[in-house]
Length: 109
Image (cartoon, rainbow, N blue to C red; front, side, top):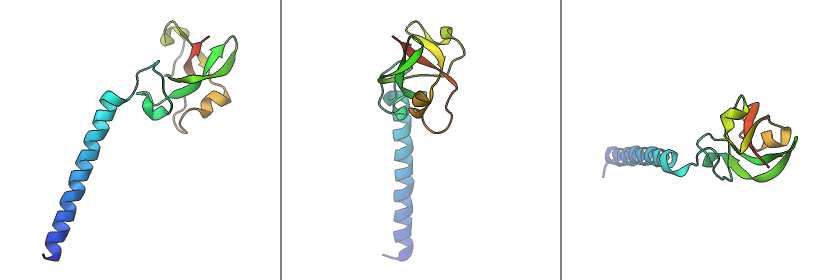
């Protein structure tokens, strides 16, 4: 085998791996991530990439099971079981470092 054929095989293997990785990401985005309101452990598990481990109890935000959330402007954006609130520091710490919304839907207890 010549050096050229070795590099050609390595190049082919790299292209195939990139294509398979791209296909896996598409499958993950279509079937693997939960919609708004679904349970989650990390933000990658949500289609919105926002998994928060807090809920609203009265006027305070309390620790809760993880739920996929979304940004909002008013309570009507959140549906019947959630409220649109300004996120506290602890709730903001649940979210990824970039693109944190000021307001998000939290489950109301």
